Amino acid sequence: MHELSYYTLAHDGTFIHQHAVDAYGAQHVRQSRSTIGAAFNLAGLYLAVERGMTGRQVQKMHMLMASRSKAWPPFEPPQDLGRLTVADVLAAPPGPLRDEALMRWCGSIWSAWSSEHDRVRAMTDVFLESGGPDVRKRKAPD
Image (cartoon, rainbow, N blue to C red; front, side, top):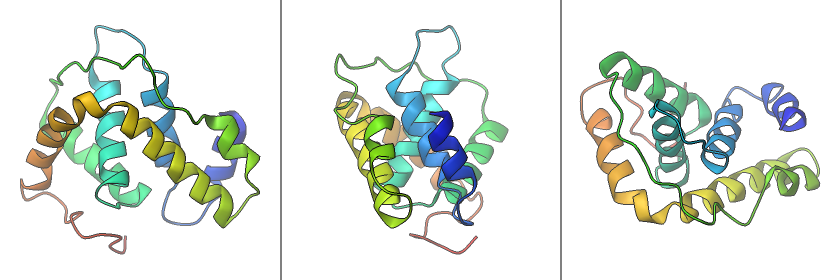
C-alpha cells in the first residue's frame, strides 16, 4: 500500500489517492467501536464507482459528511472482500493502465460489499441532497 500511496499522491489534480485509501480501508476493515472508517470508505467507493466522482470530489463529500454528523452506522463486512488487491493494481504499469486497475480494484471491493449497498447509498445520498458543495455532477472540475 505504501508503494501505491507514493504513486497516487504524486498523481494529477483529481486526487486518485482518495480512491486507493477508500478501497484499502474497505478491504481491510477492522471491527472497532468507531464506525466512521467503514462508513466513509464505503461512501467513497459508492461515490467513485457508481457516481463517477473524482477523488477530490469524494474528499469534499467526506469533509461535508464529517462536518454534519458524528454518528455513523455500523456495516457488516462480507466474508469475501473482493478478488483484486493492491498487488493487482501495482502489477499494472504506471499511468492510465494503473489508474484503470485502481478503479477495477475499487469496483471489485464495492461489489463484494453488495449486501450493504442500499444502506450506504441511503446514508450518502442524504448528504448529496442536502445542499452542500456541488459534487453531484459527474467529473465536475475542482
